[in-house]
Image (cartoon, rainbow, N blue to C red):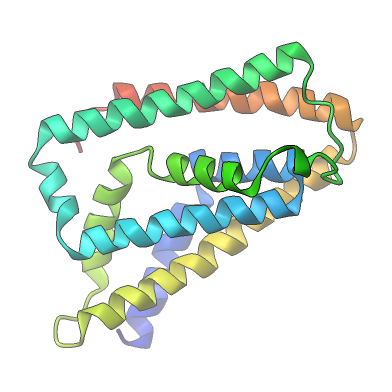
Length: 211
C-alpha cells in the first residue's frame, strides 16, 4: 500500500468513524459514568472485535454473509435485540435513580474489567452490516501486486489509531459538557438519552433490509 492509497483509506475511515454509532455511544456512556479506564477498556474490546472482523473479511466471510440471507437475518436479530436490551437497562437504571456517579469515575470499581470488555465486544459485533461495510471498503485499497496480509495489518493499525483518537475525543467533549451540570443530574439525564438511542439503533438494525 503506497502513501497516497493509505491517505485515502485514512480519510475514508475517519469520515465513517466520525459518524456516531453504537460503539461511540457506549464508549461515551462508560467514559462519562465510569471514567477513562472504562472508556479505554471499551475501545480496546471494540478494536479486538474489529481485528476479528477484518480477519473474516480477508477470508471472504463478508461476501459469504451476503449470499446467505438466513444467517444475515439471525445475526441482525441478535444484534438489534442486544442493543435494545442495553437501552432498556439504561432507562431502567435511570428511573430507579441508580446513576448517582461522579465524573471522576469513583464508581468504576462497581463493575469488573471483564464486564466492560464483554459489553463493548458484543456491541461492536451487534450489527452484521459492519462486516459487509468492511468487505466493501477494504478491497478498494488493496494492491494485489503486494503481500495482502501486510496491507490488512496496515489498515487495521490505521483503524486502531482513528478509532482511539475519535472515541477519546468524544469522551473528552462529553465529560467537559457534563462538568457544567451537577454530576448526579447530568448522568441521570445521559442514561435516559443513551437508553433511548440504544433502543433506536437496535430498532433500526432490526428494521433494516439486506445490504
